Image 1: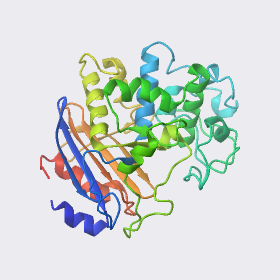
Image 2 (image 1 turned 120 degrees about the vertical axis):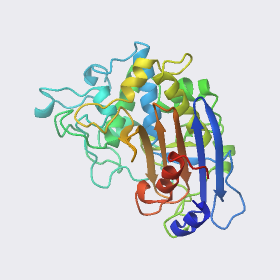
Image 3 (image 1 turned 90 degrees about the vertical axis):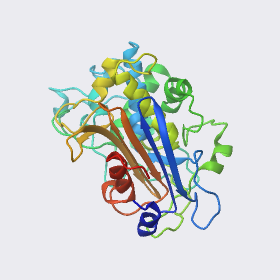
Image 4 (image 1 turned 90 degrees about the horizontal axis):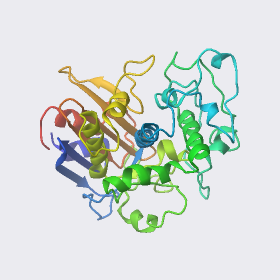
Length: 349
């Protein structure tokens, strides 16, 4: 495919693509600029907003902590929560809220209409408990269970706020701190971080390599970049190469290779259907391509940015695509989806 033609069609200023196979990154391709009309070119070091792919990284942290015996994925999370409790009600009498069903978007929480928008100018990321008690404009109602866990699957940022609160109450650490300790540092990822985390000493220099967000007309969005209140669910910034390294490590674990962040049992649990939805893994989504080959994917779509990764866990290969544009259509209908289909079919850009 002609990527440049696609960029013009969808008004995408910049694209980064990385393909991996086995334990190695095989190639990366970069197109356009970090900002429309500017000269800074997208390259290996360019950092994009991964948006909801953040949840995959949060999941890796939780599974590693469970693997180490610090958490039980199937225990009532109220047993862990000390600073706030999920209110008991009719929906929790039979089935309790657990870390496993929260990670798989089946914990009973629904996001309020218009919730989890970007931070207003001057606002810092609130603590998860402030969101849960309804003390912020980003989810102004107190969190409550609205359906029996594992009887429905509804994508929920609020559920991941509950996870973040469990981690804080049990371990006294935030998701950014845990991700650095359990994922980023062990993998040597120097260009991956959660924006909005307090005390990041490298943010000022990293911003120079961060893409600016653009709307579907190719214009820079208000505020240049959108930052979200729910750090654990939507604030990951990274490169396609760093993100590929995270997936490579997960696939190593899935196949039982030594030295991965997770063990084989944890990785296979993550990449298996969970609960009431065969398309829902734990922190990722599951599907098959036109040839019937199974893969998992994670994707992000925020103000000014869109991205997706697809990984074939049996073949141990996959592709990561990140763009600095919000095209107005879902990933499978945008340039992101076109590139993923071409690379997954064996075509090199």
